[in-house]
Length: 69
Image (cartoon, rainbow, N blue to C red; front, side, top):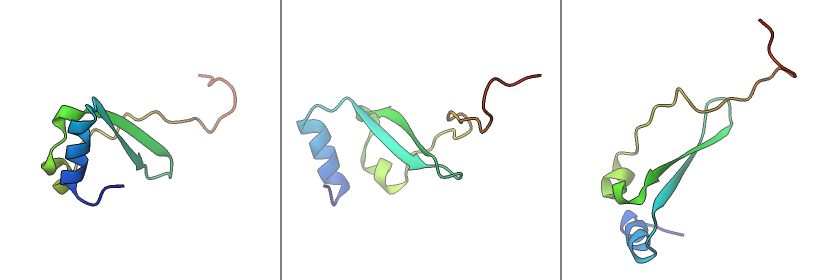
């Protein structure tokens, strides 16, 4: 849909986008995502990336039923 960061930034502005949904695949292969305010997205966002704390995405348990302690 977009070929350059400038095109994304122009779209965000022209469509009054409020949030950008960032999607990625974690190491086990599960799709994850987080949202950032569109106002925080600039050209640097595309050049250097977006840092985030990857230690807290929800995980699904491989056990069936409640955990027992």
